[in-house]
Structure formats: structure tokens, C-alpha cells
Length: 159
Image 1 (cartoon, rainbow, N blue to C red):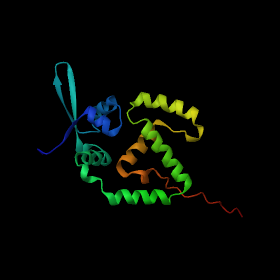
Image 2: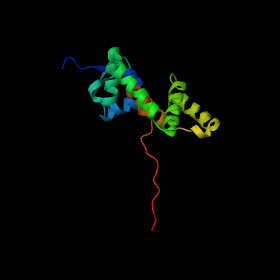
Image 3: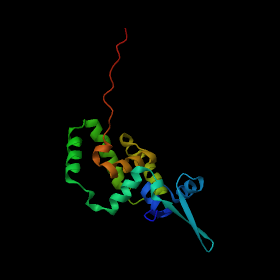
Image 4: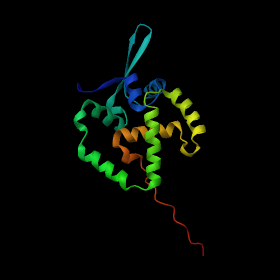
């Protein structure tokens, strides 16, 4: 067990896109395997990487190993994006734009930004949770993951 990876709350917060206080609460509730160290009046938490969701674990390990950027995977994603319907591409483009605009913002700044964004762009409305989920999908799987998987609604025959 000497090869266990322990992350600070700040690192976990950055990886999961959660507020530090949320991570701390999850540690206290036992949702994450954690340990703490008391330094003076401060209680420092450390979270075991293996207790985080698989997506987060893979994202962390991919950051450690930058050679993961496989050209074939990127080309495949671009091909799927090109073949997608116009509506699916519009949705993906919306989330790509929002991900880029909110890249360096924290939780409260993103919420304020989205309120303003939704007023200015009623056709591109989004919520904080939708942007966070889209960011995680995009970081793990690329543009392809942002494409809508829904097919057009079929009309029912009423007899």
C-alpha cells in the first residue's frame, strides 16, 4: 500500500470541479477515503485517489502522463463531430464556448456569469451543473462527448 496516492483538498477540488467545502464534507461523511493531519489549529485533509470517481482518477493519471494524447483518438472524435446533426453540433459548440469562457472561474463567478449569459443569449441558456458535467466529459473524451446522443423525436400514430 506504499504506492497509494493522496491528494490535498485543493487538488481534489480542482479535479472534481467541486468547492473545497464540499470535498471536506464528503471526507467527513466517508464518501471519500481520507486522512487528516493537524497542524496548529488547522486540520488538513488528504483524499485517497482510489476513492474518487473513475473519471477523476483517469483525468489525474492522464495529467501525469501527457503522452496519452493519441492522434487516432483525436481524429476519430473529429470525424464523429463532423458526421453529427446540426442540432447536436450547435449544442456541442455552445458548451465548448461556455467551457472556454469559464475556464479560470471559480464556482460563484461561474454562477454570476451564467445568469448574465442566459439573459444575453436566451437561445444558448445553460446551468452551472450542465456546464460542469460538459467540462468533465470534454476533458475526458473530447468534442465527441458533447454531442447530443438523442435521435429526432418520432411522431406517434394515433388510431
